[in-house]
Image 1 (tube, rainbow, N blue to C red):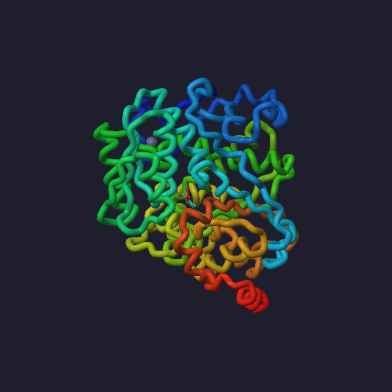
Image 2: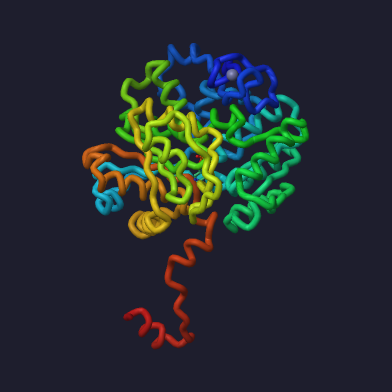
Length: 405
Ligand SMILES: *Cc1c(COP(=O)(O)O)cnc(C)c1O
Ligand SMILES: [Zn+2]
């Protein structure tokens, strides 16, 4: 396994306690310091013997490949999107389709590393709070590892596909009377009491796996670094992980240009956008986040400060989009590119369109939108935004009449 240690993101101290979710000394956020020395003498092609996927990048990962808990995550398509690009006036537009992961969202990238680490430290029970996709993913990886799993969901607010997955993979599903932030508070307390090993993105191992989305994009573009990467921001683990991957590639000298990280939130749930708008390093949590994009319906993002640093350090941007803009972008992806994403994922494309209209994104930029989750996660939303089936008798003539309408 690649040499590494847990350190405090704020004060830099090393942290030994595997169950800590914040720095014991200063209460700061945790991160992993990787020793990248072994990569210094390598080139990206040296890793290509392993197929595209998270474990191609084992030299960047703090987990033992010999003990990996994997259902072959990552290796998702990077689609060139000319038709969509024509609609939103960005010529060189790409979509990284994370809905093609085993459980249908990018969460699987983090979970393979997080659950492998849980096995390494001998954890017996794993758990998380979730708006849906984290629980779907953790439930699957816990099943694969033969571990017990408990997931905590905000009552009544989880998309049908995600809830179905968590139940189906055999997790103990607990519906908390409150929102995501309340569920997370509860599960962190359980982790501190050692009742379970916490696999939310506040766990420093999970984001390490999520770095792989950026590493794959670079391989898929043959290291022609994009000008900008646009992604939805909820708890902000993903944008922080992408930023960490960029920093590590810079450290080992594989890239010299830095893509502008551009974080998109929903208008009803936008603490990071507000902080960015007033040039703050920290954000003010929102009490009652609300949006159709349930995966980013988060008022108190645990990695919010990391997200702001990612955006500032890369010269990126942050803006919000309305639910209408999200649903319109979701439809465009489906109708122009044949790509089915859940609402939160469409926020990236809606945000790219808005920033292009505002002139923040230049027409000649090479832009990659990360589309985080599969349309089938939230069937109710796509059904209600589409025309219902047309009823017909069995008789061919009446079917022909319908076809010619
Ligand atoms: C988890 C998730 C997000 C938000 O990612 P963060 O790391 O919490 O910012 C966005 N879209 C989908 C589909 C997700 O599952
Ligand atoms: Zn600290």
